[in-house]
Amino acid sequence: MAIHGGASCRLAAVCLLLLELALQGGAGAAEPLVPAMFVFGDSIVDVGNNNFIEKCEVDCKAYYPHYGVDYLDHAPTGRFSNGYNLADKLAQELGFAESPPPFLSLSNASQWMSTGINFASGGSGLLPKTGNGPVMCKQVLSMADQVGDFTNLARLWASGDNRLADLLSKSLFFISAGSNDLFEYIDIGPQTNDTELLQSLVASYAAYLRDLYGVGARKFSVVSTSLVGCCPSQRFIAHNPQDPKATDKYGCLAALNNLSSQLYPMFATMLQDLSGELPGMNYSLVDSIKMSEWVLENPSTPSYNFTVLDTACCGEGQFGASGCNFSAPLCPSRSNHLFWDKYHPTEAVSQIAAKIIFGGNGTFVHPVNVQQLVASAASRP
Ligand SMILES: *[C@@H]1O[C@H](CO)[C@@H](O)[C@H](O)[C@H]1NC(C)=O
Ligand SMILES: *[C@@H]1O[C@H](CO)[C@@H](O)[C@H](O)[C@H]1NC(C)=O
Ligand SMILES: *[C@@H]1O[C@H](CO)[C@@H](O)[C@H](O)[C@H]1NC(C)=O
Ligand SMILES: *[C@@H]1O[C@H](CO)[C@@H](O)[C@H](O)[C@H]1NC(C)=O
Ligand SMILES: *[C@@H]1O[C@H](CO)[C@@H](O)[C@H](O)[C@H]1NC(C)=O
Ligand SMILES: *[C@@H]1O[C@H](CO)[C@@H](O)[C@H](O)[C@H]1NC(C)=O
Ligand SMILES: *[C@@H]1O[C@H](CO)[C@@H](O)[C@H](O)[C@H]1NC(C)=O
Image (tube, rainbow, N blue to C red; front, side, top):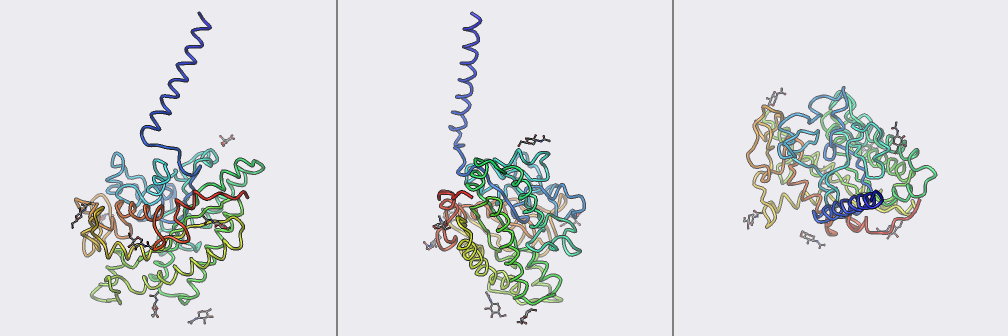
């Protein structure tokens, strides 16, 4: 009796487990396409790291309403979005529920290495000083900090264990960085010349990628800087009646869009050179300039309709550029706005961008898209 009882108990447990697995499968939650996703960069992909940085200014945190108004339970989580952001949306394309958790929220980060960690910090840039000085934020995790935190963890975690090294080589390293360096350069006024700035950004980027490769990363998805001169804060600067600046055909701050446009081919060359040099390194680079031009020129398609292209949903005044918080006015429909606040896109835009990064064609992603990148055989470190 006791033996039977024990057996049926175990059987019941197995059945429950199978049922749970079946339910997970039935809900469309198939096995993710990569074991883990690691995220680096700025506020486009930060999911709450800045909340944990005490000295980081409140403008560079997003833990208060109306942030998160369309997220689960309307919770402001630190995402600079009305809902999910680009890291979440790409994670969803890969089969995860959302972005991996913010690094600074984890008490034992090594337990998360097998499924992924998000190191991104709003306001950060490729240069260590970006976001860490008087211009913006005061204190953030620079790319150097983020990459250092990851490489320290990876060295401890995967050292001597081939299965863990193999897992890292199959994982996706998703990076969105560079915009804040451009904002700061334009805001402070040039301290170097344009060429020198852009070359230093590319050199820093290459060094971070080498560091990540050095501890076993092989598959990189890189988001180039977009038409950042089109965000409401920069349109506001360009159209200041006291001090108007040159604008481009979209009515955006021309100098900033010009710099950002020059950066894309430099990123492309750097990545191509690096993958030629580092055996087994593969990457997918999205041309965010082309992507934003495409959306600006095709705001209405069978899958979406953007009617407000220049003004923030959360914020007031010209272009809604005053800043987003609990007392700022909120637009009723987020899905027809390109911009959520004065710097950041709506969830609807992140959704489109993630679809292009994951499955886009050669107009937007080079040399392959992320779907092809993660399907390619990983070469062991
Ligand atoms: C952290 O997690 C690892 C497993 O990844 C474990 O070996 C280690 O003991 C944990 N450390 C602490 C302090 O809990
Ligand atoms: C920019 O600065 C670099 C180094 O200081 C210098 O070699 C180069 O000639 C400068 N370019 C222009 C266009 O001034
Ligand atoms: C940037 O502006 C310069 C002139 O100021 C122009 O020669 C160049 O073609 C522009 N580059 C891009 C990528 O728009
Ligand atoms: C990955 O990189 C190798 C060279 O390191 C190249 O031969 C291969 O075609 C690349 N695969 C993809 C899918 O880009
Ligand atoms: C967007 O508007 C067009 C007409 O301008 C319509 O054909 C299309 O179905 C709309 N798409 C969505 C998602 O509402
Ligand atoms: C909240 O936002 C409004 C409008 O953008 C601004 O005028 C106000 O100063 C902000 N309040 C706080 C406490 O930051
Ligand atoms: C890629 O997709 C865009 C948008 O659907 C389309 O306009 C473009 O022609 C396509 N490019 C290629 C190379 O297929």
